[in-house]
Length: 71
Image (cartoon, rainbow, N blue to C red):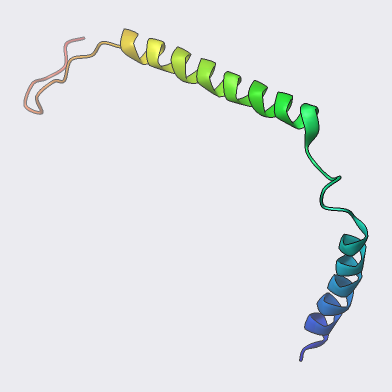
């Protein structure tokens, strides 16, 4: 085993001990976590709606490759 691997395993065992101290039933995201998630979802929905509106306004014509551009 390499020194870095043994060092990582040594530190991870300390983290496992800390994780055992927390009660899984008491650690929850709660209302704040739900509100943050809801706000992010609403923001993504609004951005997608705005993007679709702006893309809908774009109009362009494709020029054939043999046609020269007018100045």
